[in-house]
Image 1 (cartoon, rainbow, N blue to C red):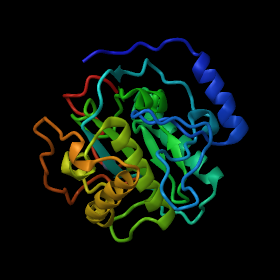
Image 2: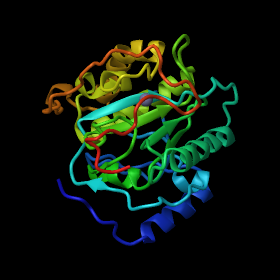
Image 3: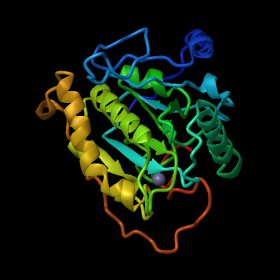
Length: 274
Ligand SMILES: [Zn+2]
């Protein structure tokens, strides 16, 4: 694996400004799709290749406390989490941006991590936000930003934090729909088969995350993601399958720490960054 040094900051500066000016930016996928305009559906209702994405500049992110590690290979898994925060009925953009900010503060100040642990965040209003620094441009390049969200698998898994707590209820339709668009974007960018790549946190670590209800939705989310990709002309059978040993399916603990932002082990001895 090769670590990619950061090259210059002109692109970041430009994108930061653009995010502030337009609110959201559509990103190019790894299969050559690039677009200057943000959209989630076209007039026929076919999903676009990428979600509207609110970059770190939109939520006034702090810079990482140490350099972010980027690997020159695609991840093998997309891990679905819940944030273990309240199931808010504030579906506004302002609330979504504040959520990203509060998660980053917790991860840096309480967990001692270099930055937000997850690569992407989705609010209950359906807003999709950049988490850890360098994520969007790395996805576009087919590279993997090493996060801190799934212990011992951070080198091979990209994480999506979904706002809420989903043990007894499911997410909002807006969150669910944005999650499918995001999953399809990642599968396409990285060439991943949704049926094998999309996992829940509890598949890898002893945790209830992403909650019984959201976890039970994963088969439907995989199928929906595959349908989006098929509609985009992507052949599912041609997509890549994981080559490692994969999930270990540990037992869900009944004495898991219960506090806001705790959604299971985010780092382990096999992770080389924080
Ligand atoms: Zn989790």
